[in-house]
Image (cartoon, rainbow, N blue to C red; front, side, top):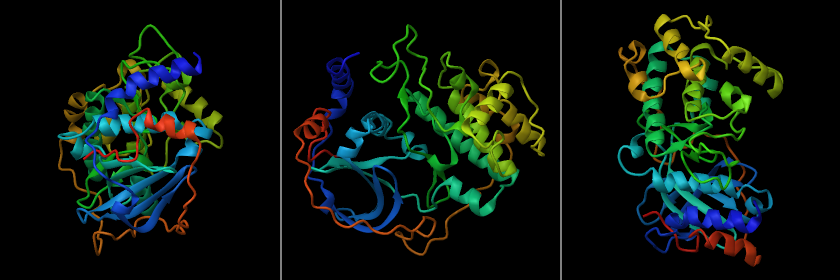
Length: 353
């Protein structure tokens, strides 16, 4: 598929996303407080929305770097979910964006601030969680995954780093950069007759289902496998297929995926039985929250594992400390980059409000 064809498909796919309500949002609409995250393409800042006074996590991404490294598709995937999976019940279980806008240099996404950090941070502090605590997260995350699937997306990267803990102790699923529409077009995927199945080898190795590694096609069921791995990690303090290299991890997963195991590492019988119904071959796996929520492990008195004890609405004690970036005033003059972002509705005043 040539570049013109890909761009044509992309434009058709995202034309619906290019019509949000407009408002004059810009970086000056936010008071930057401190940097709480940093990656190869940008940073996340704890910020205060000057118009509402609310605290947000403002994700900033360098447009030129995204284009140069071929990561634009990841951004489109995240925007697709953020603009589609909104309102009830998504707002209870999926991270939401309050504003999306661009300037000459960067793309900005303002999202709700998870003052408790992420589940990985909690596991680093606690090592393991009690079965009743894991049951709480299992119930919340089963509903979150079902919610995302109901909106027509597979997440494909469910892991502790992408599970955020909010002020009331509830968790939400976030980071939709590897998400894909179910029964979508094939702008970023190899064309197949059955477009409900996916074929890209994506995800984080420790949490990847065996059918992804086999390369014969997979469905949104891979999110349920990944949930099972997350729950096992919470129960025993490590991922079950850890190895020194991704290749060795993949080998362990493929060997395990060919049989149904009793998961002997898990002490609690109810928890073990629930995880067995997730970490198993695709045709034996739970496929919906309706199935999961009927399991006895999710029906007993679950307790909230962690409620962040913060001193103020902008307390970021559960985040790493990063040096602040200097203010950059250089303008991107590459017309091709500007035109590409504008073609998807990302002009200077786009907001989700």
